[in-house]
Each structure stands twice: as C-alpha cells, then as structure tokens.
Length: 288
Image (cartoon, rainbow, N blue to C red; front, top):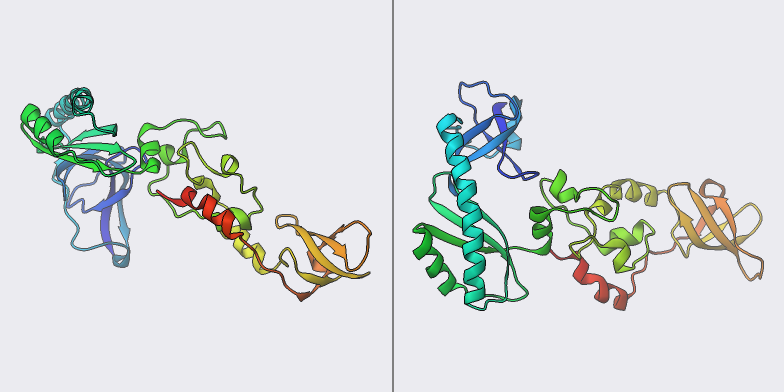
C-alpha cells in the first residue's frame, strides 16, 4: 500500500496521484507540484489515503508545498495573463485569417509556457501565429487542437435535461459511447434525440449501459421466435426494464400481446440489428 493524495488541475478534470511526503493535507487545499508540463498548482480533491500499489504508477512525485500567500498572488496574476493572452490571440487569428476557434488559454504556474486550445475542421498551419505570440509574451507557446467534446467541457452549458453538462460538472474523463448502446437501450436513433450540445452521443448513455447489458443476457431479443402458454410467435418489441415482451402470434391476424419474459420459452433468439446505412449516417456522433 502507498500513501497518496488526489490532485485536480481543472474543474471536473482528471485526478492525479501525488505523494504527500510527511504532510497531512486536507481536501480543497491548493498545492504546488511538479508535472510533465512543469511546476503547476492544483486543488486537492481527496486527502491522504492508502491505495493498492497496483492502482498507481511508480514512482510518484512528491508535492513541493502547499500554496502560500505569495503563490496565491502568482495564481491571480496568471489568470489575468490568460485573459490578456486570449484577447491577443483572437486578434492574431483574425490578422492571419486562420479558420480556427480559440477555446481556452492556460498559463503554467511557473510562467514557463502558455497553452492555447482551439478547435478547427481541418489541420491549421499556425507557425506564423506562434511566432507572433512568442514575440508578444516572450515565453514558450504551445497550440493544441481539441475535439468538440473537450470544447464543451471547457466552455460548459446546459444539456437537454436542463442540468449542467456532465463533462463540465463532474466527469473527470470521457467514456466511450457508441450507437450500439443507444440501440440496446431501445432509444430512437434520431441524432437530435441521442446527441448532446457538442454534436456527439450523450455521455449519459454510458450510465445505465451495464444494467441493460445484464438484462439483455436474460431476455429474448426483438425477432426471437418464442412459445407462450397459448401460442407460438415472434417478439416485436421489448421493454427490458419491466421485463415485458410484445409477441405477435405466428400466422395470425390477431394483434400482438404483451407477456412477461418469464412466461415464454425461447425457441430461436433474435439479433440486435444495425442497418449499415443507419450506422454510416450516425457514425460521426461517436467521435471526439
């Protein structure tokens, strides 16, 4: 077992493990640490705790110190520098007529680097832009192209549920979401119904997927040939959460009836089918 603290550098960002050394650090404290990007400041999201060695990558870096009054002043100065850098970069983008959208700016704690995050439909030649920014701020400049999901996480907003974007509010990392999930959950494959404001599949499709996968294991699929107490027929529809099946009697004009899945015997199971044209049209919703 190893003693660690969890540090986050962005709101709802990924949590990284650091060694607290001999210090006892409370949650919500601001600490100064060394990362691959240089010296950074972050918020402690959980205090000292012991974790299994298998869950960490050794060796862990030890925090440098908890932030003091001087450090907090630097943090405030860096925020002002970021605001100024955002305005300057916007002007330079227009000046160079670049087809890109500036999303965010980060200044490392040690003022060693300015990172500019942007979105664009294609690859952008921003070499001249970097030269101009380096001449203005006299520090290392890095431009990073991000996806629309990352953009939504940075900017935030309200989802169709009326609540704050999950990615902005609490999701530390994006989870893979697929069209297959929407199909298995019986959702309409209408892009406006299953995609978020970012234009990609809603992250919340992942939340209940494990439950649906367990229910699918014990339930016939649409198209299954089953035997009920009164007749044989085909499953036309299914409600996984209630365990009810809509079964149409074989070779009969009588309307389909709803029966419990426990009251049928599966003779031949069906398959979850995804139309190729449907998949092709919706595939873009799965991207970053």
